[in-house]
Image (cartoon, rainbow, N blue to C red; front, side, top):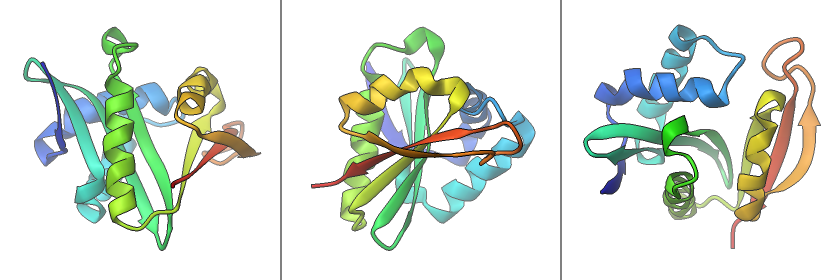
Length: 148
């Protein structure tokens, strides 16, 4: 049985491990701080997927005015292609709408380009790219979703 709930500080270690799947440019220690900062700043926009008592996915976002950035979404490799990412994304998008978001951006590291079809299934479209966003040689594909 899968449950989506708000992220807790006690989830940080597992979430940090999962985050490395979507953030090949980061180190777990440094990225843990980023996840914790996002959790503190946006507790209503930080969710985890729990299956059989174990955290198997997470999503976080940040919002400024009516524009949001999907900070992270990741699902454990052994749990992918089960609809968990879809459920996490839908939960996040509903929360962002409640907060007044009109546009959601997703930044996908080029090494994770295989995630782009996932975003396309959810009506995101490529809007551009940024060279060296996460450091030299770490180019990023930007996708955008206009919320209805």
